[in-house]
Length: 416
Image 1 (spheres, rainbow, N blue to C red):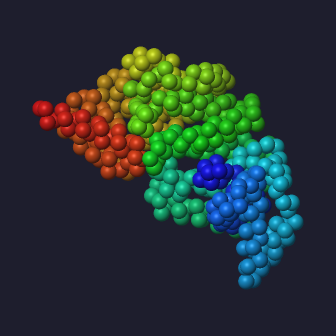
Image 2: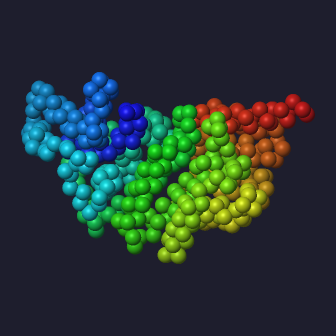
Image 3: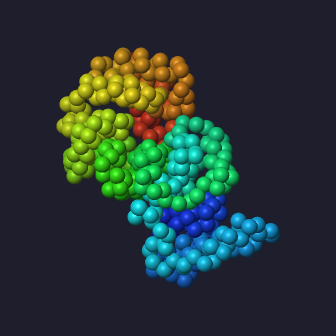
């Protein structure tokens, strides 16, 4: 039994259960870490349990009780926590005794709980990603394009606010779910993005995160069948995930959309994603996920990159930029306009974006400039931009790709 794999697969579910039991993010996180440490020590010696998740939840629960008992001065709240924990039923099956409320998935229930309206949306999303989805503080900081210390402080303040305001750890009533839907969908999409293009490490794709995000997206669609938002989100994730097998080569090297073998794209996911996107758009949803899903649908329909309807994609990015402006949308819009109308038009937009400094530290901006400069035959400038991107990139796979492109343009320069 691979404990490392169990850690990746079960961390979120185990922590979600223990948070619900102990009512404290910090205590739960510490107790679950100790439970996994105990597993590393005991399982190889005594053999793995029949139900690893149940074993981990039960062990973490006992660890939490030990923590409370060891407290030198047990205050009233701690005493109540201790009594509640001591009375809680031991975990025997795969699921806990926690009431799931209107939802059957505990992790999704807790995502809704963390996305409490009393917290700022960025704090809701960051805390949920850290505690329930297992992303590191550094990964979350990259997703929000903020420095690591800023994100670390934000997480600490959010936990303090939850404790000070005594925000209850409970599943909201179904009538309250739509008010939290935007934050919940953002959490799920950020988890998918981290899985689709890992911000660090040796692998480009973290498949387990993509699968988990898609699973949560499906449950969200079941929960709110009348709302087209979850359908648009699920469509977007499926259409992106359909390219997974074509995105890396046998040596785990990055293969760009332009170079991919499209026969490897998952046609079942494409069909389902396109149907969901059409359903969401037909329902009048033209929000961010629906527009992005429409763009992904156009890519999915094209036999080659040259057959792609780039003018239509550029128009969709125009609409996305008007309705949901952000530096990242602006970056993608510039790339689409370059593909539709030539690299010079895209470069003008990227130069303007770069001059504002909003994406300083974001490697995809110099990487996109380098690509357009290469397409335009500006080898010296392209090489400089590839070097700038290499100074910022963290993913080993992305780094290898940028190094390959840099060697190509340096070869052009040396050959005159």
